[in-house]
Image (cartoon, rainbow, N blue to C red; front, side, top):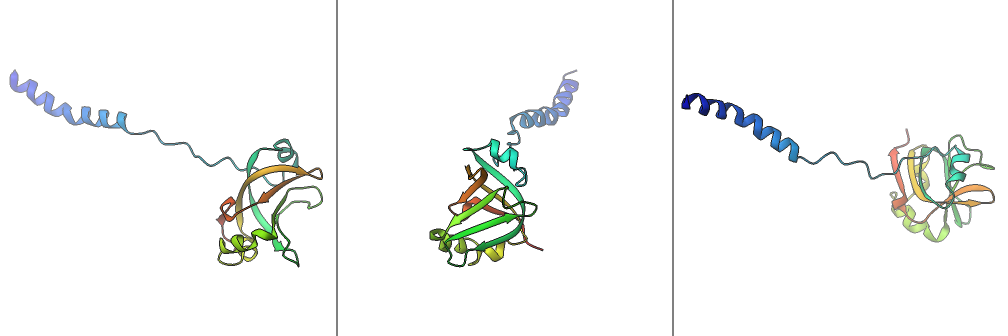
Length: 143
């Protein structure tokens, strides 16, 4: 009988150890990245006025003005007269270019990007101002 009890204990030990270890394993962590909004959904963006938001989409156009005073990112499918404006000041050109291999405009055009920033209403349109390269993530490079 003693032998039977010892054999049962030895047989059950791996199952018990596995169960204990599985219970102690950390649960998978939820993503810390905010859910991305559609940059073409102007109404939803306007409703988020004053909040930090993340938008994700394909860049149709990315360029500095002729005098390098402003940088603009236009997402595919956006009416520039009514939709989201993503912009940066010329004073940030050096650090923005440095963050994207020396030419942010070339790196972003045609790429799928994720941009996070404070959304503000400007002239009845949603706008995000880029202050640094850390606000922009390339999800898929241009094809």
